Length: 406
Ligand SMILES: [Zn+2]
View (cartoon, helix red, strand yellow):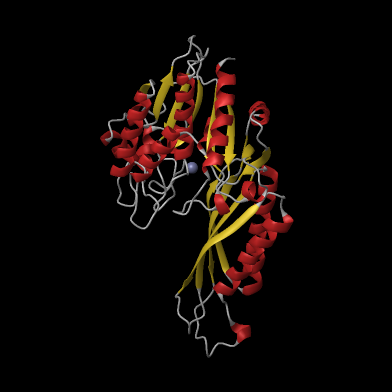
């Protein structure tokens, strides 16, 4: 792999680095701001003309021969708390590396090529993911920016204003025309490594439906209440959790995943029958009908369990998002590019959300995955070997060049 990429990768990894390993650069914290200004400098060094939009997205443009809609590539450099060095960062730095290679080879393209660093991709600070790309595609306004707050009560609106952005402009400008968008990202799952395949071509991005479910029974003495006279909310939730697993793995679609991420039992004492349990359920699928089927089955199961066990159930739907199918043209182009680079590729769905899913609403969008060792991500142990990053850069390079000459 190229030395300047490595050099930059290590420099960026220092910003917000933690003594115990990994990195914390939550959106618009001092660490993230430092990384953003570092990146801006690297863009200028690569000869790009740089601008920042209302949501703080940083855009570096390599001019084209004609005034045409640009080809864009990019990702994000904010992280989760104690995150890894690869999630997001690889995609932004790979885009810059492609620019440097084009510069070195003195290649002129018809269309401009833009590198975009989306702000606040991770939901860790403001509870909403892919904020920058939502704003870029016209799906976030100033009012929403006022309502999104971090756990200290500081709003996105205020944070953007303090960073010198103009949140009042959000949603007021027509979305800029983009010829195509390609994102390179680590897989954050185990499939590519298990298949010994360096390049994943993403066909669709799964979307979550999330519920907060509360089952209520009655707290009673664990010694003096006979088994047939109990209304144990935790036993009911246990049945529900196993039901979610069964429905997602066998009864909905082949790509459905379902998770009960937490269950809080009250009062939480060994000698008291749990009278109230809150459980968080996350269902994802790339197929809308399969997800609908899973959601319906889980809701009906809740009702059955409550009735059978004398419990009451309340279910609060926190989000219900649409899966996104990516452009068939881009899938084909990426496969062709991988083939031309003598790299094996495979099609796969993305279980995690990415900025690409918002960009897909406004332009032809492609998403390249490279392997994550052990499937580990959002963790300081996140790792992708150099040779796999280089493979991703090559495919990105070929594809961007092709699109920029269209
Ligand atoms: Zn990411």
